[in-house]
Length: 71
Image 1 (cartoon, rainbow, N blue to C red):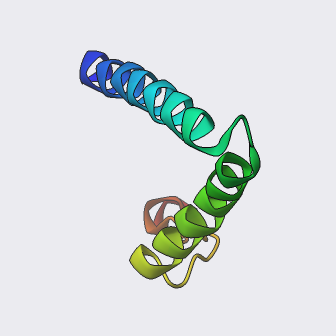
Image 2: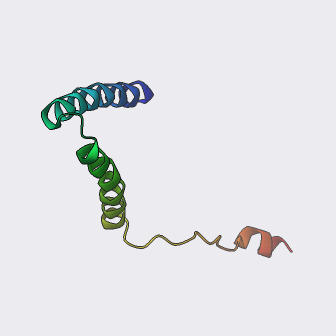
């Protein structure tokens, strides 16, 4: 499973580099669209995490009944 994730990350890097090159060629070397995209990626990831797990709470340990019975 680690290999599949590494492969997907590497291919994502290859595709992103090609896309950045095309964007720079089309805009005459203007990096603004790339910075906007990269900055909004964090906001989109944050929104997806909150949609998938709306309430993140700390885990509390339940009392161990076996220890209480032994005492």
